[in-house]
Image (tube, rainbow, N blue to C red; front, side):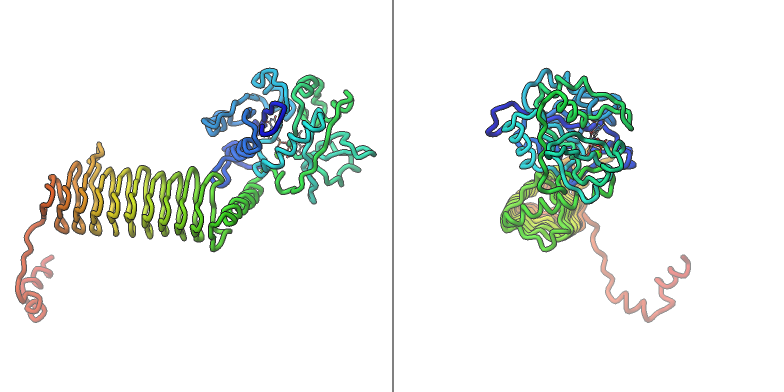
Length: 473
Ligand code: UD1
Ligand code: CA
C-alpha cells in the first residue's frame, strides 16, 4: 500500500446468489463494459494500492473462480451462504493469521473508487480504530442496513432492514458493506456473532455492536458521493451502474484529448487506452485489452476487442477482434478482422472484407468483397474485388502466400496451399491451384466465344434457334 505503514489485504465477499438478478449466472459474473462485476471491485482495490486480494466464492464458485483466473487473487469457499459474517469466517484459514488492515467489500459494488478505498484505509490507520465503516446517505434507504448513531453522533450499531424497529425506518444513512477492519480485532471477536435475527444469518454488521461492548472504537466514514456505493441487485441496477461507469470512463478519455461526438453512444472498457486526437464516433465499442494510438477515427458502428491500433488508422462500421493494425491502416466499411490479423503500415481492408489469421504487408490493399484466411501478403500487393483464399478443404486449413507487388485479378480463387510470387499477376476469374512464379501471369478460364450480330438477329426473329430452345424448356 502506497505510503502505508501497515500491511493491507482486501477481502471481497462474492458467494451470494443474487436471486433478484433472475439469472443462471452468479450475480458477480455479470459484465459491465465487458468486465465481470467482481473484477471491477478487484480493479478498484488494486488501484488503491492493495496487492493481496482474497475473494469469497460460493454460489457458482467455479464460474466466478474461472473469471478471476490470472488476476492473482486467492479464493476462499463458502459452501453454504449463511451470511456476510459467516463469509468472513470462511476466509479466515486463507488469510492465515493476517495481521494488519483488512478491507472488506461486497463483490457487487463495482462503482467504488480507489480514492474512497484509500481514504478508508488511511482513516483506520490514522485513528487506530477496530473498524471504519463506509456509510452513505440515500434518498431511498429501503433494503439497506441502517446506521444507528448514539446521542454523541458515534456509530452505535447497524440494523438490517428486515430487523428495523418502526422508528428506525426513516433513517437515511445506510451501511455500504465496505469496511476497513483491524484484522486482529475482527478475528479476535468474530466468534461472538450470532444468527438470532430475521434472516437466521451471521451478519458482519453485528461486529459494530460487538466492538462497542468490548470497548473498541468504530469510526463511520460518510461517502461524499452516494452513487459510488450502489450495489447491483437487479438488472435495472446493472444498467444504471453501466451508464455511470460509461460516463466515468468516457470523461477520462475526453479530458485526455479524445473526441466523442456523442459519448452516450460510446462504450469503452476500463482498461482500454486511447491516444490523443482520436475521434470516436457513435455506436463504437472498445473492449478488453485494446490500445488505440493517436489521430485515429473509429466508427460509427464499430466494435474493437483485444486489439492494437496504431496512430492514424480509420475504422468505419467494422468489427476487429484480436488483431494488430500498424499506423495509417484503413478498415471498412463493413470489414471483419478476425483473430490473428496483422495489417502492416498503410494497408487496407475495404468494403465487406473478411480477414483471419493473416498478414497484410505494408501498403497492400484488399479493397472489396474478399475473404483472406491463413495468408501472408507481401508489401504493395493489390487483391482484386471478390478474391477468395480457399483455405479449408473440409478437413484441414492451408496457407496462401502472395508476394510483394503481386496483382491478383478480381474474382480469383486461390486454392491453398498455393503461392503467388513477387510481382506476379493472376487473370480475373481464375481458379489458381498451382504456384505462380515471380513476375508471371497465370490465367485459368475457358476462352470466350463471340458470335457477331447474334443479339440483333435474335430480337428480329422470334422463330430463331434461341426462341425455339426457350419454348422447349
Ligand atoms: C448487506 C449488509 C447491509 C448493507 C448492504 C449494502 C449485512 C448483513 N448486510 O446487505 O447492511 O446495507 O449489504 O449493499 O452484511 N455474501 C456472501 N456470503 C453470504 C452472504 C452474502 O459472500 O453468505 C456476499 C454477497 O455475495 C454480496 C455481499 O456479501 O456480494 C452482500 O450480500 P447481500 O446479500 O447482497 O447483502 P445485503 O442484504 O444487500
Ligand atoms: Ca447487496
